[in-house]
Image (cartoon, rainbow, N blue to C red):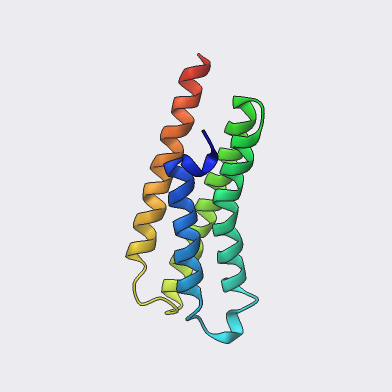
Length: 117
């Protein structure tokens, strides 16, 4: 099975696309600030899932899933900040996707841990 077949990877790539579309409407002066940071955080999620999946051991996969989870938390904070700064009218859709991805990463991590037991 390829990483592109994993639902968690597909969902995280969809989130990247959503973040790019959303941040394209942010003020120009945020291009190198919040826009760049949000895009980097979003890209880091599927990238780390992919890198971990491509490693040889489940321990390495767990490590990269942890990094992806950290990037997801970072992105969640940035989405909240963008809403507070009124760059976003509504952040509910993004927060819901982020929440779903948190659950998926937790579930995937639990599955890997139980397979190692």
